[in-house]
Each structure stands twice: as structure tokens, then as C-alpha cells.
Image 1 (cartoon, rainbow, N blue to C red):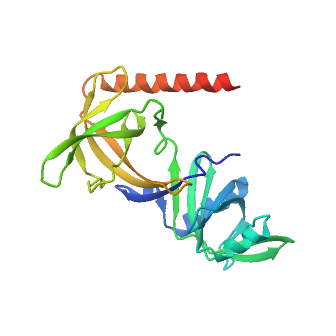
Image 2 (image 1 turned 120 degrees about the vertical axis):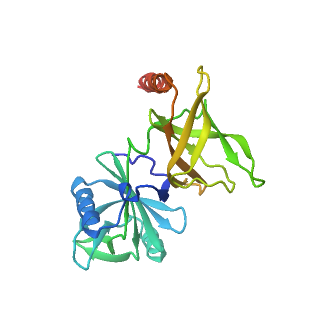
Image 3 (image 1 turned 30 degrees about the horizontal axis):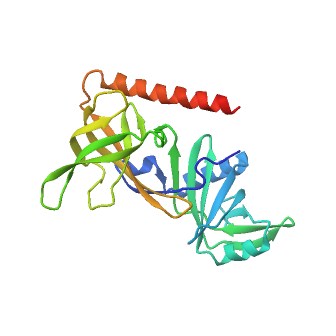
Length: 259
């Protein structure tokens, strides 16, 4: 099993419905962790702070004081570094849903003849369903953009093109520019333009629904704002769906060509 986007870390900054993504109830968290154990899902554990990571698995999850048991590294030197880490930032996948959680204060133990790390249950757990977070990711080679009238310091607005990270019939996710522009949930951008290839610009009102920080393995940060379409003109949804189907067909053709 491979872990989708195991080289990235995702942090929820704001969302209108936080509970849709972030669990804080210990019973719900424990139930999901037990399912991860049962599925024998691989876990990418990154030593925090830092970029070093290792591939592991959850061996045990229970309500007792022992908490979680995470398989240790095969490298004793790496296990020593894990002990010195502040936390382990863990990513796995269960039923095609990305699961992310942080384990604090790992303690090296020997159980059943194998080394492992005992950790307390995480305080929270992030779940990202593909249909809600990873929609159609736009091609890097042929980037598509969205033009938004962003507020300026002098009170005026200036049209700015933002890169679209992914798209669906209901909305887009855009890369937030590195400037002091509010992208909190509920923020609206009227008269936005969706710029798709071979299609006249599509006007829409965009409403921000969530904001995530995505950190790559190299440490580069990207803010991702998930936005919902509103007031789309007649025929716009069909044009968006045609673009999505076209990109999917091209990707499928390339994948078949690699086989």
C-alpha cells in the first residue's frame, strides 16, 4: 500500500464546519486508530521539528495508560533521534481517507521481542476525504487560474490571478497569495473569473469555506483556500464538467501509456 501525499503535511487553519475534518472526541479518535491497526495500514511518521521521517505501522491502540504502540525503526540510531523528537507527525490512509495525527512524547519499549514506541492518544485527528479535499488536481504543466478582485491597503481592489490547485463542479481550491488578504471562511469575492482553457472566462461569486496550510517535504508552505461557486451563469457547470472530463481522459491515457 502506498500513502497518498505522504511527503506533505496538512494543517487545518479555519473551516466553517471544523468537525467535518477535525475530531477531538477521544472515543471517536480511538475507534479510528483501532481500525488503522486492524487494516495494518502503513504510517509515515515525521520527526517534529524537522523533515526526517520513517515508515511505520500502528501495532496497538487501547484505552489503557499505555495508549498507542507504534512500530520502531529498524535503525537504532534513528530510534535515538525519535526519542529526542518533540513529537511524531503521522500520516496514513484508511478506506481512501487521509488520516493525520500527532503523537507526543514517544517512549521506546521492548514488547514481544521487538522495539516500539509507546505514545499517548493524540488530542485530535484530521480526516480528509478525497471527494471533499482532493478533487481534480489541475495539471502543473498547464496551470489554470482564477481572477479575484483582492482588497489593497489603500481600500481599493486589484484584479489578481491566483493558481487553481484543484477543481470540482461545486468549487475550486486556490493558492493564497503571500500578502495580508483575508481568506477566512465566509469571505466572499464577487465578480471572480474562472479561466479555463478553450473556454471564455466564467464569472462567479466565490465563497471561502476552509483554509489549510500544506507543508512539503522540503519545508515549503502553501496556503490552500477551498472556495464554493455561487451565482454561476447558465452553462457554466457544463463547461467545468467538460474540462474535468478532458483532463481525466488525458491523465488516464498517459497512465495507460506507462503500462
